[in-house]
Image 1 (cartoon, helix red, strand yellow):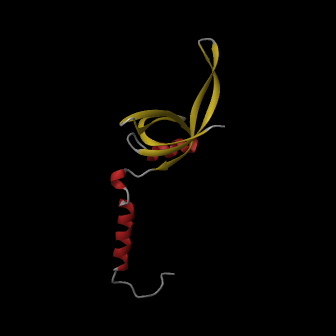
Image 2: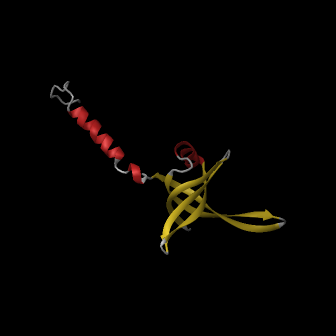
Image 3: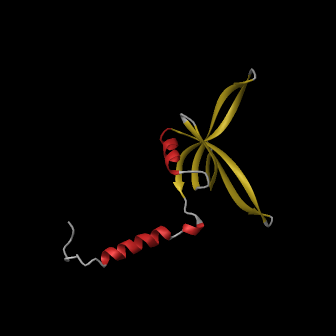
Length: 124
């Protein structure tokens, strides 16, 4: 079984009844310039529902997928087709938001620490 991990940006998202198709764009430096590569994935079941709810075109994403093959008749000829099936997805912070969530959480904790209603007793 072949596995693939890709971190990039969702270029295209196509939702259907029982599956979601994703195209993920990965940009990398090559020969002094940038090269874009596109990877096509398909998601089913709970993974499909998770992607549909939380990810949209333009969002960064980390995808873990396995290669799956199936036979299909095309123009009277049986062909073996392969696709990458998403097993897991992960959220990825964008460059301009890195650390923002941690700073916000730290500010919330500091505000709570400065609360005047603290009577010194443990909350449990």
